[in-house]
Image (cartoon, rainbow, N blue to C red; front, side, top):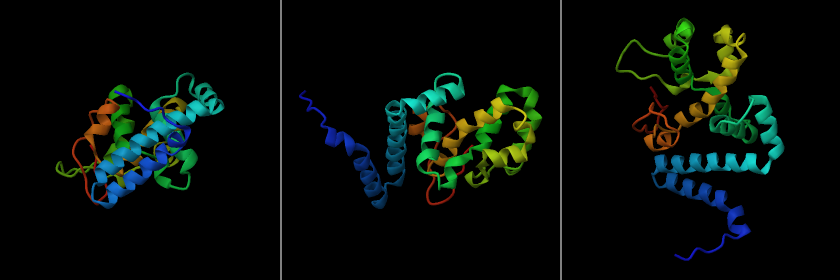
Length: 194
């Protein structure tokens, strides 16, 4: 195999080309594939962002007390560069509440308060992503979050999930993040996840 060296010009346009390809794929009806390519490219770009801006990375490491998780990296990247899109600051509330409930059974009653508003009594109806809210709104709904800075901070890790779930349910993407929550696809409507 002969690998051609990557010129700075081609690297500079790598993500632009991915965005163009994703747009073309979406236009031709391959929406899930387009979203997969776009979000994988955004995640890679977020990694480059922290690499190329060591001051930002250092600040995040100090704030978070160590390595920056990929979920926080992507959440912060999106909030930095797409700040006017309210979806980037929404928490995937059901995922957050279910994980909170499982990891801290003593708080199950608090997590249940969040879940009961979002899970239908009809076992055939899945919860919908439009019920996701921002961390600020979440702490107003559940004041205990305000008294638990660690838990409030953890909720940020569920922000990137909320924006992804508004696009699609895709097992291929979640295999890469070791998630077993999502399977199947959605078309043309708010995504249901469970």
